[in-house]
Image 1 (cartoon, rainbow, N blue to C red):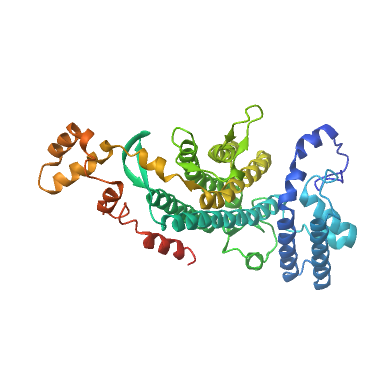
Image 2 (image 1 turned 90 degrees about the vertical axis):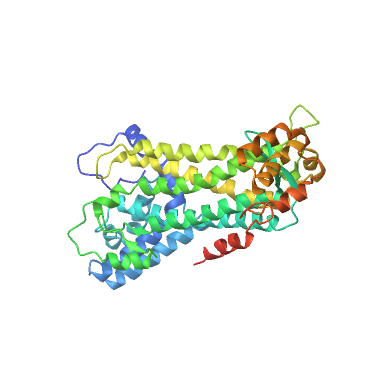
Length: 431
């Protein structure tokens, strides 16, 4: 390992302790490394603006940072255990290539604001991906809800309740994922604050050009207080994981439906073959493993959020405990977004089994229609309710699922899905 940035004279370093301190940091930093380089370029420009480095030094530093980024992308430079972390690797490389100019690059910043800004840039990318996935899911749901509706049993308590439709099912998830996309936007607005220049959490005795770095890095605003920059670490990461988890809660309920609907007992849905796997012992089996793992994915993201939450039992100021948040954040975001990416194609290609769904609609499922009709004709609802309950077995006489759906005119229901309203909401996400 190269000499740590914090190494001082006459201090012995124990290799076992260093290994524990470093942990998986240098490996995890591969995910954030290019963002760290981008932020370093902005920092160099800010230092040049206040005369800490010369214009020639700034040009050389930015040239070498670009070269390092290219080498990292191509594999010519590998971030590995030669370095304590990504920050150390950047400074070591610049010092190797540029001598004293490389040693000046850390002026006015700490590894604390360095990881904060790199992570913040990475989080903005994760939220952009989350919004994209949620919008794609919403669009597929709207497209399929627009197709001719097929009657589908509606369930409460997992018991047959009323006549529903494939259009209503898809419209419900469409609206949910429009909200999930909006939440991704709102979370992006929350975290879009530049912490670079807050150093270790108390500022520095240099008039850093934080306005320049804020603009250069594409942040909407500066995170003004150095103390709050540290307080926001973990808080902002949790907000991103919560946004991803919120979308996965809807995926979990959708996956539960599909898990049931694909059983032989229901037989409502056929999945694309790519989304099923075989049994290792039972030749007759095709298992909905993808759907089951989609259902389980919320747990991984929720666990990542909980781990960060547990780390945040801390006083103000930077504490090393927060190093462990990187692994949770990376794994939670990676798994959650990978799960969401699979959903649009699954929904676009799944097939409904109309005969099986029709066969599952039993006469008693029209009892609510009967009660509402009687109430609309002037019978007190509770009297109409009791009469319909007593005659539930014959409630379907002369009725069809299409008739029930056509009469369902309350906004958002069978004959008035308001898909135009949902399309408008989805469109307005573009601003």
